[in-house]
Length: 126
Image 1: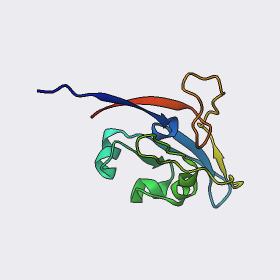
Image 2 (image 1 turned 45 degrees about the horizontal axis):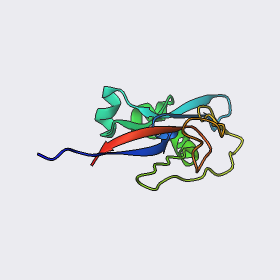
Image 3 (image 1 turned 90 degrees about the horizontal axis):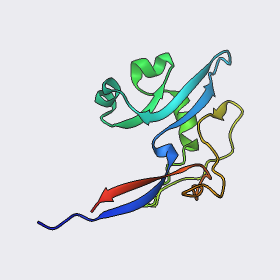
């Protein structure tokens, strides 16, 4: 049986974890929207290991909400293997990104080429 070779790829940390605070339409509450590894219940509901979650009532009942739709464009999602990643548009006043660290040029893997955030290394067997 031939050995599998492994390839090393860089990917933006936002593929593992991303968070944003989104102001509600009533402007009296802020909801934390996260893209992260889901717990078992959410994995069963979304049929995925990673996905979006929000603390609002609409998400609890429907599994989606307008807060997620507002935060979604600001997650980079860069992956070297897939050639994906989207530069974030300018933040509106009702959205603030919480967990996207800006990486300095001397970091071990360098900054993400799309958003400037942290990179991580992923190994895939091919």
